Image (cartoon, rainbow, N blue to C red; front, side):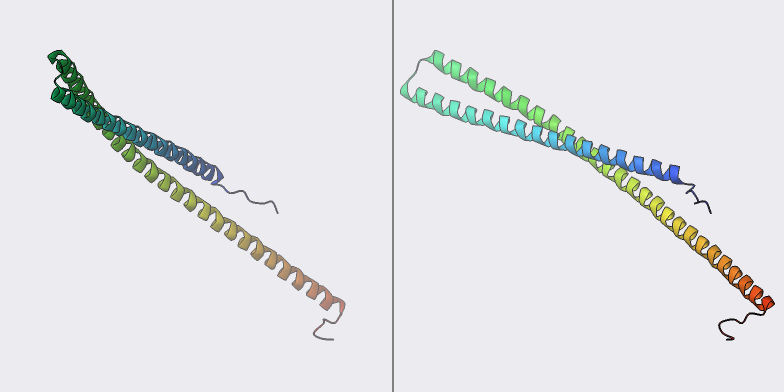
Length: 171
């Protein structure tokens, strides 16, 4: 008897590919999120360094003013500190923008995770269906073989009876 072919094999293959694609998309989304978080941390560190430089410049300016430095040098310090404050504000804007990027990446990861879970469930359903189909086919083949063996046994019994041979139970 020719082995039966699973009719939904093409669909099973498609579901497996969909799961793989969802898996890759999830991995890419997680990688993008990780990179976005790392960039956010870098921006925070840069902002902290700017703030630290501003505090140091302020201390230096105070110490020089206490000693009695010329007014021109004080203007240079004030301009430098003003520039540091502007840099800090720019970093703060970059940080806000990056936080929005991180939130967007997090929502993308959540969507990719849902897609992966859905694809995995669909594939699992198809695999279970194939398992049950194979079990059904095996049971059907076993049932047919059993019927054929019963029929063969009945035929052998009838032939022996016609020939006058005694069966094992009659002997």
